[in-house]
Image 1 (cartoon, rainbow, N blue to C red):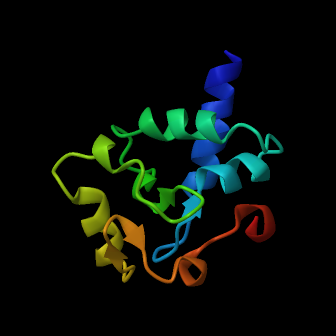
Image 2: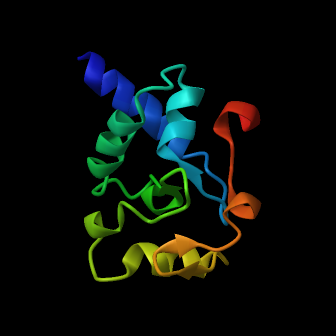
Image 3: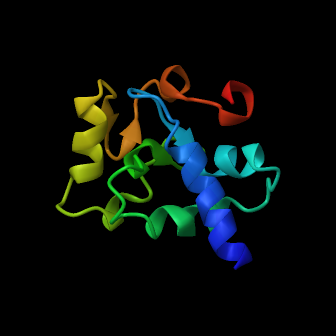
Length: 108
């Protein structure tokens, strides 16, 4: 039961990531007050791919790498979704990561 509650809290934050912005698993964990639970945030994001209202493509690792890309249908869907929002990706890495980074702990 606690795990479901944690996942829902992750999704509440993920739904608020603005178009054209990205955040990290760790930033979501920190915003939830559970800074050491970035991996659990990743598990939550992996579990949400059938939920159309959660922009999982906007959650990347702390260095801007598309580490969750293999969980998306198609070969480059995560990258294509980000690029459609104006975010440039080269070699699975977001270019100008700091410019596109959204900090939920500060923004919410």
